[in-house]
Image (cartoon, rainbow, N blue to C red; front, side, top):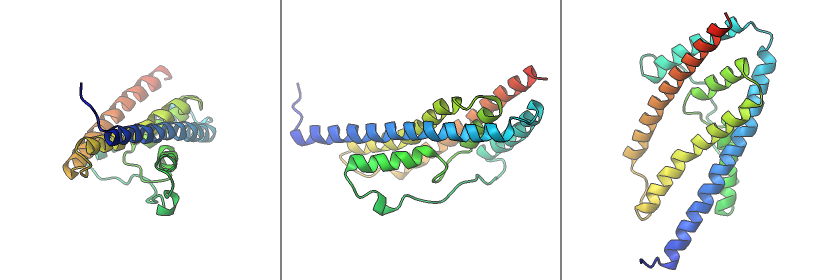
Length: 197
């Protein structure tokens, strides 16, 4: 049996507490905003014919699949706003609450991948607004997990900063996963539009 120094146990307890608050908050914020996004898209588009929505979204998805695989460069609409330093000068758990609430919402800060928009358009066009709760929660959680993972690796390496190569590898993997997600969305879109023609 290994004896863990009290400081080490306290450090890990603090890590799990902050990681839990951050992950939970991003999921809740994502769920609330996801519902609102899908509701807005639904209200703006319910009157459009299904075929028009399917063709329009299909064109966007194909274009952004090409973007994600580096074949063309497209603009991803987003805000470049960052959380002001004065907003995170509290206890670590309170700071994680602020970070999670803002990052989980999605559109308030930088959005790394276009699947955010495509999935909400898909749900708003062909789903029901309540489905935005689940997808928003999943989106929020996926915003938190890479950060928690890098933070965890930093804790294991005695507090050394994350290697920039780890961050770049994570970014490349996220780009590939985003492209694959768009291909799955395109298949769903094709199946959905085929059943309504």
